[in-house]
Amino acid sequence: MKDIGRLLRRAKPYKLMIALTVIAMLLTSVVSLVTPEMVRKMTAALEDGTATVKIMAIYAGVLLAAYVLKGLFTFCSRYFAHVAAWKYVGKMMVDSYGKLQTLSMGYFTDKQTGDMMSRVINDSRNMETLIAHALPDLGTNILVVILVAVMVFRINPVLAAVSLIPVPFLIFVSSKFSSKVSPLFKRNQRVLAEVNSRVQDNLSGIKEIQAFSREDDEFRKMADHCRYYSDVNIKANFAAAIFHPSVEFLTSIGTVLVMGIGGTLALHGKMSTADVVGFFMYLSLFYSPITALARIVEDVQSAYAGGCRVLEILDMKPDIEDSVDAKPVGRTDGSIEFKNVSFYYNKNEPVIDDISFRVESGQMVAFVGATGVGKSTIVSLIERFYDPVKGDIFIDGYNYKDITLKSLRENLSIVLQDVFLFNGTIYENIAYGNPSATKEQVLDAAKVARADDFIREMPDGYDTLIGERGVRLSGGQKQRIAIARAVLKDSPILILDEATSAVDNETEALIQQAIDELSKSRTVVVIAHRLSTVMKADKIIVLENGGIAEQGTHEELLGNNGLYARLCNVNTNKLKEV
Image (tube, one colour):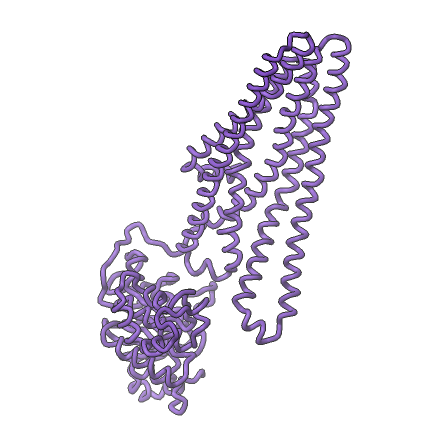
């Protein structure tokens, strides 16, 4: 109930639409009471001989007006309900997506993209049933039951009391159904998320699936997931298949009792035929809402299962967030300093341990070392994707925990080894670095990144669509577009994490020209295995076993004849893994 209360409070901005929905549904219910009353009056008039053509016409006219109003009120209730519901769903999708954007990188390390997509889209969408149907129906049906109860008690209290006999049994069956089906709906949502994750993973890795001829294996795995999803739904529907006929049977028992007792009362002259007919018509209005309550229970359970999964996202707290005293800063000078910084992903397994170094404004610093020594971790710490476990990091003399995340990252540009490009045009992907940039600035950034030539050779030039993740481009082309995007951002600190790792020598030479030009006007942090990139750095920091083994210029480190000298391989122009 606490979670449902939270979900309902989120509907507060749409209370006017919900109120109009409820009012329209209540008016629909009230108008529905006209039909049995008119039939009762007509039967009474025919029975006592007071019926005339004029009276019949009046009854028919009242009934026609009631049906017209019922149609109008039904339209209003459905329209207002769905306006409120879809606005609610849209807001929940936006809020859950917005929360995911605020969460730190640590949150995403063990999460599947498909599962998060399912929570944002499918689980949020389930709330439409709660807002548009379950809640308005619940309130309206309760009122209808009360109004009809008043009418039938007015006609015959004894017969009305008899008609209430099935109600306690209906409540008992509904509560049992709710307790049984709730876990099934929760499992249903979880399994659907697993199916989404499998589809997303397989479509993202379709090249690898085909390259390794694993289509049959992946098809079988997908079939198993879908079969399990079907089984979970079948179990939920099996419970519903038992529940709904049980409700109908119990309401039928009430009708049977009323028929038997009401007919007996009419035979003995204790009830008129008109009252018996009217009672039966009211009775149909009485049991219909009770039967509908069974469906509402199912709808609420389904919506609750999805809503809880969305609330889990909304309740998440980011590991990295602005401190209370964090201040925005403008453009910094680009200096970086690590003081006794340690970090680990898993306790007692430090990735970097008590390292200190300083990069002056305008310097180019390169980090080298074997795989797993913490090079990319240092980049992640500079970007503040993670916070150090110990020690402090300073940007332009500011402890970067005292700077707002937004202003910190506005001073940083990054080009990763695994370049991510959006499904759009080349121009849009470059302009992503600075949406307010002019076309001339975008073209200039592409020229600096040595990307302008190959872009102009494409069929549509800068308007060429590159496909999802830039699938239509080569690795070198993607990296040069990523560099152009970083150049356009024009931040004082540029981070290049293996920006030349997957390109040929010719492309590397072009990217190297871009790096050389960029290093003249900003601080550049480089992680690379290419010796041609590393040797031009103002400072090379060699990492080993989570610490700094040595640092200096290329010539100085070669002269030391230490780890860096052993890493160097002048024949292949790369650094060895030793």
